[in-house]
Length: 310
Ligand code: SF4
Image (cartoon, rainbow, N blue to C red; front, side, top):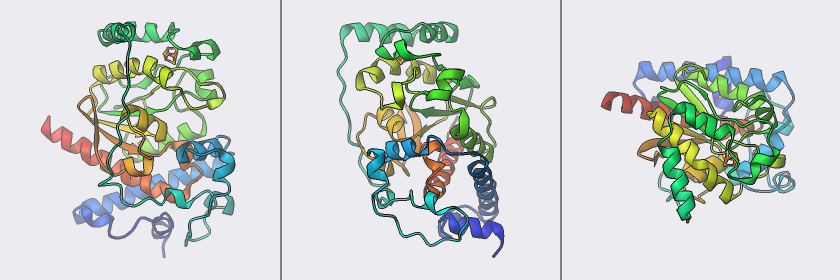
């Protein structure tokens, strides 16, 4: 078995998944899968994985201590990763097909003052929006930040990626998705022929770092989301890829687990949304990389379809 076939098998990409494309397209898909898999492998082996335990816990919506003790999914694969990494794969994530899973809506109430603020933000152009975020004190996260993290990329992008909130490195550098998770994200983008400075824009739901990387509070999301909403309205992407459980549930007003939000196309402000796992989580969870690649392929299908309809 050649290396490409070994990786595809190891990552659990089944044969029946690939032939959904025409033969030539399927070959291209396999080749691109290999590019992504190789890129991920290189990143994984390059450096230590500082944030992975937190990421796994966040994706599973459980404390890290609980994640470490849940039963392992039976995994039959070549020994291409260390046992500790494979051990992070848990039964809780082997969810059934999400296609028919309903989204459980989360209702929010806003105050008149919030409504007025949202109206004002919704009218801002890029410079005003950027300045407003940089000086924002609308929630308590402003007190602990080093920098706001506004977003980065092409303001006319057809692709938009949305994560949760800045972490420590992002707070220090003022840019989303830096460090190991950022490298993996860049490689995922490269597999799609994208880069963060070319035809993609990357932003978070929250522009300031929650202390200790804790989960954002609903009030913080309520105060900050108008900025993201305005960014999306200005960019008008053809597809939004949401990275991770929290960002997906915030954007889609949902409490549905990420495993059931994946695999189907949602909508935010009329723009198609595809949900996938957070790169920090993928750094530690071998089998879900194949699922993430399926998600990106779905996003590409959506993007291409939107392109032909434009
Ligand atoms: S998180 Fe958002 S709403 Fe809160 S202070 Fe930062 S920019 Fe303002």
